[in-house]
Every structure is written in C-alpha cells, then in structure tokens.
Image (tube, rainbow, N blue to C red):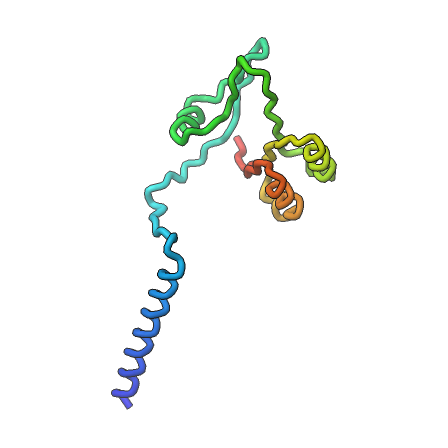
Length: 142
C-alpha cells in the first residue's frame, strides 16, 4: 500500500509539473514580477489655482511623478486647447447624455470615477472606454 501511495504521489507531481509547463508555454508573454519594488505610497492628486488664468501648480511630488513616467498633466499654454474632464458629480444620471454629446461632436474626455460609480454604473464606464475616453479612478481624500 505504501508503494502505491508513493507512486501515486510521484505521478501527481509529474502531472502537476506538466500542467504548469503547459500553462507557461501557452502564455509566453506572461512576465513574473515582484510588487515589492513598487511604491505603495498614497499620493493625492490636486492642484493649486493660480491668478490671471495661468496654469495651476501641480506640486513638486506630482510633477516629479508625471515627468518620471513621461506623463502629461498640462498642455502648452501657448496653444488654445481645452482639456475636458469630468470629476465626481456626474452621478446624477447625466452621464449617458454627456457621452451622447461627446460622441456627436467627436470629442474625447477624461472621467475621474469612484469605485462606487464603477460598481454601480459599470455599463456606462464600459461605454466610456469603448468610445475612446480616458477613465481614471478618483479615490484620494486630503
């Protein structure tokens, strides 16, 4: 009986290794990484309003983070572009109409949503994404 259990355990191990090998072979683009090298420091996003319609101050930490990852937070002050964003407050049932208007005018926007909104209006969030809008999670409280 002991010999049978030993062989059975060995076969189980071999089959497990074959399954693991098959999974890794099927998904060759999977890269194992360690999250231990990533920062989990909470950084609140905010801006300091400036006078005379000048661009706001992002703050040192936010600006360094944006520059580190080649991000864009501000446009060129010499060009006449409008950056349309929607933050908390559109939960009152207007999102569908906003999306319709944006689509009719071929305009992309950025929506800052809460986890609650994602959980309660996932169909609208999916529509935002499918129609080419940027969707960001808004969670930071000062």
